Image (cartoon, rainbow, N blue to C red; front, top):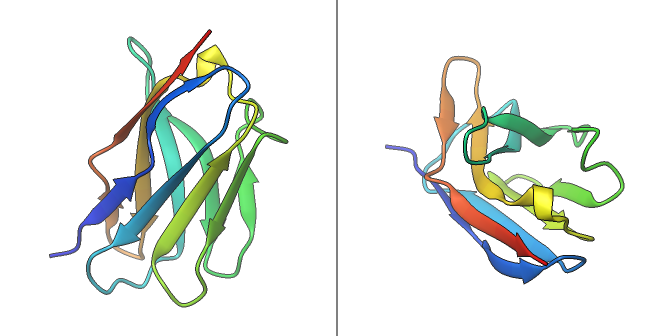
Length: 114
């Protein structure tokens, strides 16, 4: 069974940086992988996605601050988060989308403090 394992969350001061990682434990043929986040009392929202060909898409709120990347040939995706703001505090979820199935990680907490 495929699992997405996330790492890299934690507590950081505003203006700081964190790097999230996500690796699939099994073999999947993902069309794209991405990161979503959910803050308390809010719906889960898209942060960034990257296709197997390397095309990226970002939420307006993170453009210029976050960078998504993936290892070529591997179902591993990263999210470099710079200039973090208080409003970036959320649980961040990794997603891998195949032609038939959408896989989700368990989530990793990112907390930005003032």
